[in-house]
Image 1 (tube, rainbow over the protein chains, first blue to last red):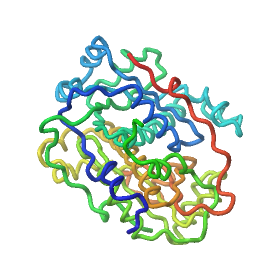
Image 2 (cartoon, chains in turn cyan, brown):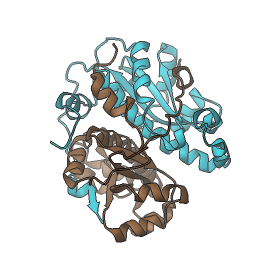
Image 3 (cartoon, rainbow over the protein chains, first blue to last red):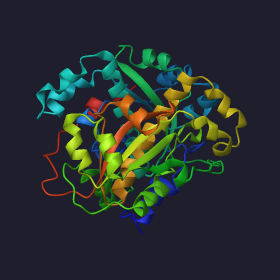
Length: 196
Length: 196
């Protein structure tokens, strides 16, 4: 037994957790999202950058706006979820560094270049999306990250400031009837890990 | 109580988990890394792409090679860890799709374009790096993801095929003496989450 995390938690977060294709009507509450944030906010990012921003798409009007940018194959499933979250990188994250990384006041200056900033924002925000998905599962919910959409369209529609870069659309809820396909295979240890 | 995951697991994975600045000499075994992989391999990726590849840097010679590409501020801490992992995106991940996403045999063709493939590989591999960091913590170890290095240099040094893109270098071990700085602050829920 090389893992310390107990088996029930392993199952909840990874082994039995799945991306659902159908959902029940049970709402996902703001309290649940707050509890998830309060857990996963501790996940590490480079220089404590924390570039992830989350837009909860709740109103019918906002759902319709999102729907126009989703690929055909993702639209119906995503809009059927009780909650849809747009996860994006804040390209102006460096403005928070003086307060978030106080022992290195010059940190903000390292990100003066837009291309450097964008690369770092996307990288660290994607780590945080990984933590967020685990956090949704920690709340007993399923999270389906989708990347089939018009990113430029979503950026303009939901941010419009040129300072955010959408990463994924995540549908969140409880699995409904016939929620799962058979699980797809996984690469073996030998295919993934090498030693030098 | 909006979370189902029990408090001890929350502490292990997020609340009490930290990035260490010093390490004990206790080795990190291949068995541990295999157990971590066997857990986090289930984390979701778009179309089951699974682009993450991991190079365990164990030999003194490989550590020296890695050291030359690390930024000054990261070198000493990283090379002091009992295990260093290079995490990278496999830009040829699509070659595995016929076996990994068997119900959609055309999936591979969606990634014929190199730029499309690279973007998707990096995005999904970064989600997997997030899962991997959680998995290291599930094994009772600390994981410090570092992005301060010459990425092009590491790609050439450790892959050399033009088909991998390094994402981070992760030092792994058990915390040593004076392993922690005071924890940096975190953005509030209101700074991160908005509702539309």
